[in-house]
Length: 585
Image 1 (tube, one colour):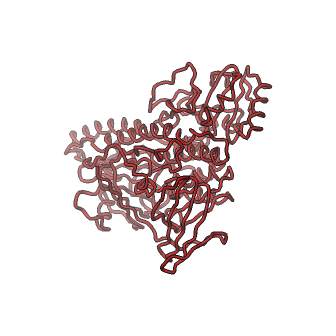
Image 2 (cartoon, helix red, strand yellow):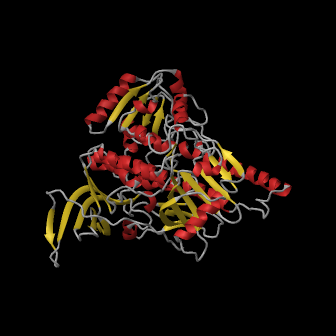
Image 3 (cartoon, rainbow, N blue to C red):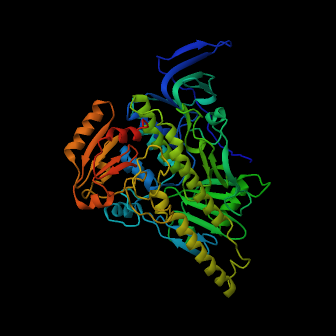
């Protein structure tokens, strides 16, 4: 299987190391500094930064290395799922994330056209940011979450993540340093890093190394782990070589003559394009298919922008980036092959998506959340010997599920048959557009109205989960039925008009006591666990609604807000229940 990707990186700058690093001289007279830490994170994208935040808020020393000095200044992922927004709410900065991107009153529709200034074929209305705020406070049976999805460019969200990383004293940032190689040690790993600008070298020895370093991961390379799955190059769109054009066009929306939208899809036989509103003013990105043998020149980009619009308009190209679509790839392993892994993978290093459906960045965030609490538990001594091995057992099936979804959506839109007379001003043309519009409307619902994908992730085969007699519903991308069967995301409900039940949970484990619970016994168990060094909070939520939703009197909530166990009675061997949940059966 061929793997290729073109990435455009800014040159790294020389980093300033804290004065307590030791150093040694190499044979060439240059200085190599060496630092020791608990966790080394290779890669400072969303996976790496969220992992650093999870470790930092628990005081775990870690070093994050990335070759870029600043967050990206070029468009990447375009949407943050409801689940990722729930994580950001738990971490305390969902409002800062939601403030990024389109203005509060900007329509977040997905619209399909022959060309943007020509025939509109289909439209899926989307909430404005202000409407999403109103929706949060309402009871929504289809999307039961305190944090609806957010349309915001990754290049606007990463600065927020970086700001949050900087808040944590236990996190050391090494920006402008690239990882050149990775060594696997008996009890950890060693990163060899260097600055391309000044030649400064850095070695980072760590008990645990996490490769969040993308599709060309040095960590994955060291472990000899391959991607498994499919790559499709021969689609009319979203297959093979693609070109993203980042441009300014203050008159873009006026030139279309249509209601403003978040996404604009151009669907015709001459060209295919996906154009995305970044700030609702003049910053816009357009993805074009690159035909075989075509060089991605500025002239090609200009022709593509005009062809997708269907009329001349003024624009200024800021930059271009070539990339590859058509992937459905998941690493054969997410960690080294030892029972207690020391080197692990997350984000694009572990799975590679076609961007349809917007799952790549969000799956990376969920990886980091899952791995973050487990690494912290092991570093702090309360995580058991099988805890880190559970990371692959839980996350690899989710990655496979999500890549299947994205691939299916790419197949759906990329292989859409287009008649010759689609753009004709004739009865035949109008009939063709009506038929195509129905197909596109159906596709839009299948790609974007996906509460099951956002909220229905379930850790079915996890060794950490204490199963009960219930059976989880079949995985449904398009429907989500709230439940608290162990392995599921803890279901949402409002405790009052501003507090979600999630807001009541503790930072780590929570023993949730509902109507009928033995609160005194639960308090005793929580105190005993804390005395043994296991962070367990007891939280009581009254009322029949919560009890009915969670299906038991007592529910053990994990640090990532998945259900670890539930029962009407607290068992005498609750220590074993908690032991299993923390990987110490």
